[in-house]
Image 1: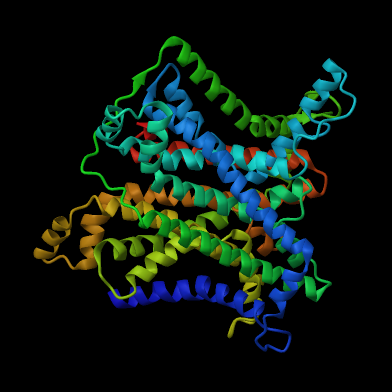
Image 2: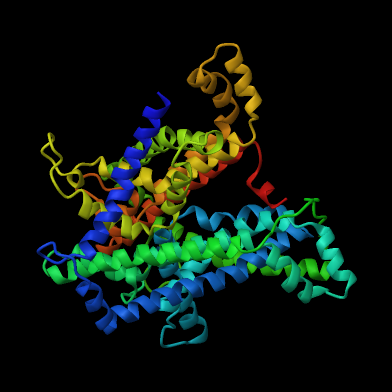
Amino acid sequence: MRRLGYGAIWLFLLVFLVYPLLRIFYDAFTDEAGGFTVANFVEFGRDAYYVRSLWNSILLGLGTVAATSVLGFAVAFLLVRFDFRGRDLFGYLTLIPIISPPLVGVLGVTFILGRAGTVNVLLHDWLDVARPINFVYGIHGVLLVETLHLFPMITLNVVDALAKIDPALEEAAESVGARGWRKLRTITLPLATPGYVAGALLVFIWTFSDFATPLVLGVHDLLAAQAYLNIVQFVDRRLFRMGIVISALMVVLALVFLVAARRYVAIKDYSSLAYSRVARRRLSPSWQAAAVAFLSLVMLASFIPYLGVALASVGKGWSLTPFPVQYTLQYYERVIVETPKYVVNSFLSSGLAVLGCVALGVPIAWILARTRLAGRDVLDGLNTLILAIPGTAIGIAYIRAFHFEVPGVGFKLTSLWIVIPLVLCIRRLPYTVRGAYASLLLVHRSMEEAAASVGAPGLRSFRDVTLPLIWRGVLVGALFSFMTSLQEASAVLFLSLGGWETIPVGIFSFYIAGSANEAAALGMILIAVAALTVVVINRVAGTRMGGMFG
């Protein structure tokens, strides 16, 4: 029975993860007749526009990592090492920007910082600035939006590392004259490297694969944007082929960065003999004011998208005025009552995806934590690999892999609505695996061995003993998978079917069609569901989210 289940897990991953990726590489390295060729990549290298898009994507990813690192480290360091008025509140607020997808954030930014947005209107009315200032349209705007959305990823990954640094190491550095910035640069920051590298890798890949934000801000010379534009056009076969080549390159680059990051961490030893709780220092009144001012400024900037989306979702007559002149709920009525398919489809697809994540994720976590089965390390590697694969690439891979009639069914998988839950299940599986795995590590094997000693077979022992002890971790991972499935845009936009569109697809469609208010209403619904999910996660986990900060 165990081997049958193990084989079923591998079959699912081979069919819905490994095969699509191999198919996209097969298409990239073959010509129209199916013969092996590298001409497609040569053509890519000779096209100056594609090469520029490649460098722009890498530079944008590195720039976002640099910007989020500055903000993320500063916020994490303040929250972990210092005590000041409002610290707990800022601990909660810091997590808010990450609960909504960049697609929602970029819409909110355009409402506030766009050429006819609130800020430019106020500058015209108050300071008589005749020409609108371009705050967001261009590569700098993409960098701004991604930074405001993703800096909590750095904070969350760094904060645990900072909290576990042995104070004796920093005290030893101070005893030999290393204080202030020198101690931070030579001791504290290097010891936080594992957490930081994990966060930086996620930030880079997220930015690298996001095509919706650049397209909304008028930036086309990026790899993800070019992959999307080349694939969705159905006229030029050369452009379609180049979209596939770009997708293969994105996967390769993501893997290169993943391997490089893991090797960089592996060549050094970050272990410690002690994990003493770091005592937070009480700041003086003047430094408290400075810390509160800095965090308030960061929060104000990161909440700009939410303000813009909220106002646009209820505002009428918002044209060349700082704020809407009228307020109404008609846009919510349109997306909930008149076109409820976006909300219903999102909950249906994400719910089915989470069921798949639990059905696969819990057994995978058990295999990783409790067995030494052959291929276990490869299974763990595949689970990590999923996080590194850009959503744009996996969406295109599914188009190429499953755009044929399934034997005995008579339909193409890409023409069936079930393809959306399948791709969401694959994309969000690691969160459920990690949630269950972390809980399994806390359950001692002796409990399961005791159950086995009184005649409870493996499955019954897991059901009666292990599962009741790990259900919180499983539920937390499942809820996080659900929240992020609702937000998935990159892969879903490629696979969307008429009548089965999800909320992110609806937001993109409404905005492209010029119905920004309806797009904002859907965005607010997405934000509200994500916020509610975070609250439930906190309740289930038995701790407040702010408790992550010590």
